[in-house]
Image (cartoon, rainbow, N blue to C red):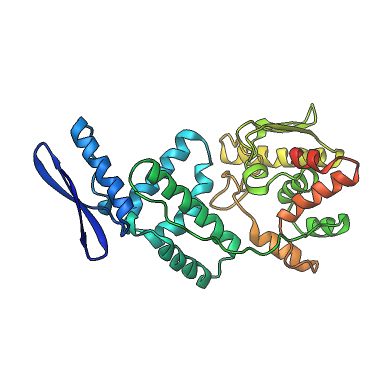
Amino acid sequence: MGMLYKRGNVWWIKYYVNGRPVRESTGTDKDTVAGKMLKEREGKAVTGQPIIKRADRIRYEEIAEDLKRHYATSGDRDLKEAEVRLTPLGKFFAGRRVVDLDGAQAARYVEHRQAAGRANGTINRELATLIRMLGLACENKKLLQMPIIHKLTEAKPRAGFFEPAQFEAVRRRMRPDLQAAITIAYVYGWRMQSEVLALRLSQLDLDAGTLRLEPGTTKNGEGREVHLTPELRALLAGQIERVRSLSRRLNRVIPYLFPHLKGAHAGNQIRNFRKSWATACKAVGLTGMLRHDMRRSAVRNMVNRGISEGVAMSMT
């Protein structure tokens, strides 16, 4: 017959496996939760089921790997995107016991990230990843009880829009390949990093005048195909020539529509151009404008052309 007993503020359980006593920390100060764990352990011992290692020995790194494996196998989220959230979490929680990852620890993490100058919205996205990780740990029986973690109040969404003249002023100060990239974002509302910069030459058909996103590469998982405007068709024709010239110079196939054209990363996909963007915006007196403002502007422009907002959002 098993039993509960306390060491300090934490409940421990004692039960028997093949006649031998086993003592285990529950990692909780709640007797009801500890009692459930004791009954589970006794039930597994009687039926011969494997008993997981002690909850107080499971560390953050183990459940973080579980979450990565879940994303990789289920496709619930892009793993590269998840790594953006997991990196700061890992730096803070590395080596910590899972049973200690409670609301107080989460609050300390919030203080740490705020001190680093991170916005509440960014911190909330990271907390959401932590919450999903802990929820999965509960599903995997590696955590007995889901802690309560409070998110922060976020600033109201920005209402930034580019007027046509403003967009043109910024575009003129970008180099030619980036002019083509931001025009795609402004006309169709596609996400810059995950959709526009990730485009491959195979997704562009200049003869047919179409550009497509493959199923599974968009946020909602659905593919899209758009017909190019005359202006964008000309911009992308010039971009193809630049990529072909680069391919001849490097003597290798370049599959990307927007590769680095020179320097140590020549031929590799452009991942970001925040500095160039900020410099161009500052030059025309639009400091603080975001690339995401082009997405908002695209939706507004579609609505102004008579397309319902819901349909416009589904097209972007």
